[in-house]
Amino acid sequence: FFFSSRRRHTRYGTVTGVQTCALPISVIRKIVQIGNPALRQIADSVDVNQIQSDEIQSLIDDLIETMRDANGAGLAATQIAVPLRICIIEVNKNPRYPYKPDIPLTVLINPKVTFLTEERINVYEGCLSVPNMRGQVDRCPEILIEGFDRDGQEVSFISKGISAGTFQHELDHLDGLIYTDRMSDASSLTTIDEFAEHYEEKFKNQVISIVKKYGS
Ligand code: NI
Image (cartoon, rainbow, N blue to C red; front, top):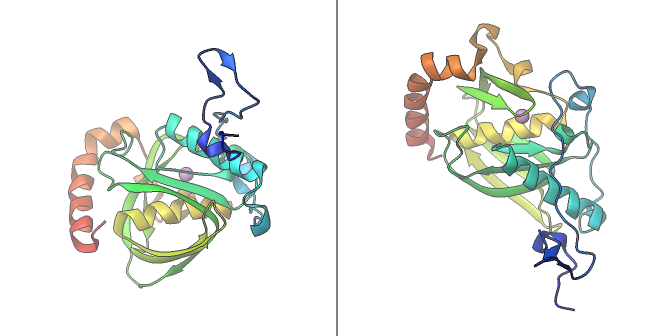
């Protein structure tokens, strides 16, 4: 049988209109918005023995499809109202965040974060669940992330700078937190248009210096 049973290799179910077999298809899910109680749930850990199941693998495929469709830099399962500790991160010349350094597609299951420095950087963030807005949040610029990948293998890596903030943002979603909860100064909240007009240029320069200092 030449088709892998793993959904991630089988993105589209039909070949030239012929239904070859019951191939699964990734689905773009609805991203819930701030105010939806699903975003406030503390997600449950995934049973590591279930990571390779069709249910979890197709959920991961759907997260990837949904994030890419929305031009997100990441997406947590809680954002599609699934209370499981799974999030994905990917930055690839992102039009919503043109200043963000690239991060290869990373699938994290049951992730845990450890701060490696007392330092904090103050950065603008946005979120697919908080449409059209940006706000400033303090993030630790050097973190250790431990968890599992989609093959059920343990992963452990250090992330620094702007990218570290992106990881913290996604992991927060698994604990029912939204970046707006982390804002020490609510007056930094801005629409994307006002951000572009008044703050983006200055922030881009800040990002350049953060990337210079931390390498990402
Ligand atoms: Ni978010």
